[in-house]
Image (cartoon, rainbow, N blue to C red; front, side, top):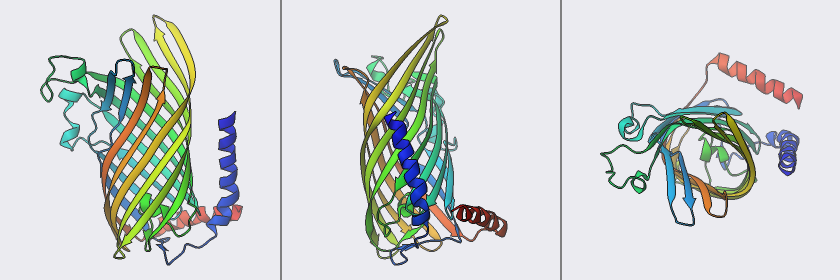
Length: 341
């Protein structure tokens, strides 16, 4: 029941403090907000969907990766709400080498809400189709870029998650670093703890056997972010967020109409970090990010399972005044939210 109590505590803190924090005006010397403008962005990144299973007895390793070298994200932020959709389009040539790596698909939806110092996010991600990146360890006469990789075309990975963040320093714009919906005009940093909680499912149907793992993660990241403003419109941001948590896992195997279920609980460790260079103005925004994240846990005394993501991201965006119907609709939502307070 511990993890349920932690979630309830964060929900209570979110609801009780959002009102007070939301009424505080943004420090105009350090941060420039755009309450009457929509921010739209296009992101292109090289984010990897990677899983690794390592046996510590013989140092053997199995690395699974999807055939999605480039992903495209379309984002929109307005007032206290934002969202994005991501996919792996085939007009990128590196996403179409299906003969060598198999066919993969990727879908991602994100929504976020800003209430003063609180940020609440929701995410849905689905990936299908993986190949064994280290195929050479399993086929002795295999030749890279000539022979197909070993493939699991029906391997699926699904994530439904959420996170709650709190920004301690009102002079630091968390939205400038993550979503570019604000403009950091003077250098500042902040401690930003974030609670993550997500449900995940990995499934692989074989000819005579079906394998599946369902797990729920809850973890706390203690992040620190800093933005250095360069000649007013340029900026460099960096962050480091180590954390730990608990993973509740259920493994299901169905073979010959027999079902076997095993349940386990693991302690997890993870690390997120990143570096960003960008440009911001009243209308145009663009920049690049380098992000790295890894999480791992020991399944038993001999096997360590890890999932890592490292990617380079490029983004470009524009701020503009929304059409009247859109502004009126969002204003009605804001009015109802304020009346409830």
